[in-house]
Image (cartoon, rainbow, N blue to C red; front, side):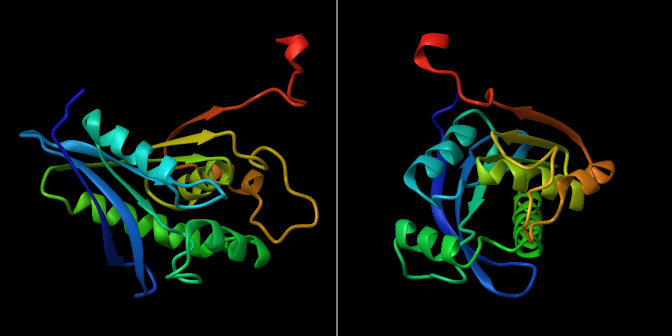
Length: 187
């Protein structure tokens, strides 16, 4: 683990020329390193997610997390932005793919990039990490607790990940919990 890292809020133009907010943490390294796009959970772009980004940098990667709710709520707290996103049905899949693609491009443009970029997402971001890996040229994907990846969501406008799985561009891992969640007596 390294302690030489830099973390900051940045803004860059996404796939649709809209400026988006993101949290970037880079490792200070003399050699080329990989990148990780972190996709936040549905509660939003919060301090816990920023800590995950910093942890990747502390472990030798460049990492970035796009604030997926920035377009709709640029000046709102992450709680208010998440509430607004929930009310509108969440981030559209095409916007998510575009923002992740732009974030991957940003990481690949860094001077110390080895051009390899993976994606990891938590909760709703888990599903979105698989969607991104089925839609973009990525080097790795990790789905942490994402729902509706191996099954379609009933009565939803979300893209069916099941139908896109043949397009998976990279190795992928999934972390799951048992459903239903076991009671304390069962653990």
